[in-house]
Amino acid sequence: MSTSESRFNLYHYAAPQAFYPVAGKLAPIFAVIAAALTLAGLWIGFFKAPTDAVQGEVYRIIFIHVPAAWMSMFVFLVMAFWSAVGLAMNTRLSALMAQALAPTGAMFCFVALWTGALWGRPTWGAYWVWDARLTSQLLLLFLYLGYMALVAAVDDPRRRDKAGAILCLVGAVNVPIIYFSVKWWNTLHQGASVSLTKAPSMASIMLSGMLVMALAAWAYTIAVALYRVRVLILERERHADWVRGELTRLGEAN
Amino acid sequence: MIWESWSAFWEMGGSGPFVWASYGVTAILIIAELLLLRSRRVSSTRKLNRLMRAGQARKMPEVQGS
Amino acid sequence: MNAFAAILRRDMLLAWRSRADLLISLAFFVIVGCLFPFGVGAEPNQLRAIGPGVLWVAALLSCLLSLHRLFAQDYQDGTLEQMLLSPDPTVLWILAKVLAHWLTTAVPLLLITPLMALMFDLEGGAIQVLTASLAIGTPILSLIGAVGAALTLGLRGGGALLALLVLPLFVPVLIFGAGSVDAYLSGTGASAHMLLLGGGVLGSLALSPVACAAALRISTE
Image 1 (cartoon, one colour):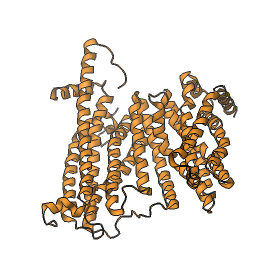
Image 2: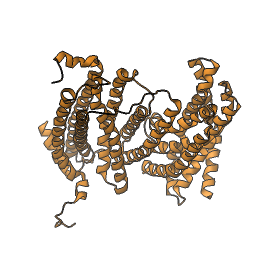
Image 3: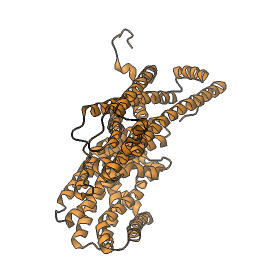
Image 4: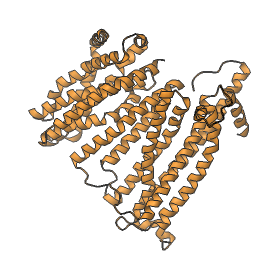
């Protein structure tokens, strides 16, 4: 091992021991960013954005609905990325990152469905239609729940990491297939002739409110995932000396 | 300010229940996630500390699995 | 190829020795199918409309019911580890086992499907399309299900967990399978659905044995 290597080395941070303090430093920063962006986004959403000409005030749900929907899909992709890295490079940290992200992704997935239903009722007259987007979102929630259930059911940590990774990749391969098939099914049945394409001419202030909220969701996800991965690292590495030291320190703080 | 009064703000042009149920449930879920995460951190540091002390006292290898 | 034939023969023989299990999944298919008229009413037009979908869902659940047995016995008696260590390509004997699963669970179901379809007042052409779509679609269920069975091997609550993992992935098969009959009845023809199902077979044939082999290695190490 060369100790003279001074340049920044990404692999160094792939070790849980090295990443743990980094996550501890970064998490509060992202938490503060998330809180600030949420406040700014809500301010824009409720006090700056004008009433929508067609939908009235109810469109203000968009400021959480769309960021939540984006986030739920994006988090699954990131989980698939970490799963692939974990399987290919055999790094423990990648699997832990995927596991740390899953509950937040599932939460956003549910929020997207919930707010979508509450938006749909006054706007299109139904809480739920079997639209391609809604249905894919629901199936994505099932994929999240399946992943979390599998990870929770396996006791052996090595098996847990790898089984979760395989399931996540299988799910990620299937997400586009599911979306395509549901879309096909939807057009054939023509059950709901609602077009959920977002308002064609959205005022730029509305758009900026939505983007600020989306960035807030990003920062929130990163912060929570970092906090959670720290707990996962402690649980996983508890036989290591540095974790024993950290545990004693945390035990005294409690 | 685009609202004439606070009551107009809460009414949201008649769709208040929908808007506030969306934001309310989202807020509850986020707070719940944060509280769960916190309680997990506290309980697992306690448990790991207990295991560590038990392991040191008996000088025995700890139990595998989590 | 010898290993493939040997495993296939062995699994078929084992399935034959415990044929009560096979009859149970077949009976399950029939009973689930028969429950629906009680639930939604026996009006012939309505039955005709829901028939293909109901039979597809019943087939899917019946397939799920037998999936957890795919590797369980070999896992318990240690045969699985021996097979993983053997020089034969893992993917090959996984395919043999999946084929055996399909032959023993899906094929009996295909044979009884025309009878069930008659109970839903479907006419000849629709019955043919339904049976054909099941014939092409069920191998995908076995192939995807094998990955789920390998991942949940030996876990507590394995059966329910397997259902949770695998059912969302079955949705596209269900859509194209049940959709083929609707397409036939509406006059557009079912060939697009059949081609897509065929593509699904090829795709899952290429990907799922690899994922299944990786999952089995993880579950047994």
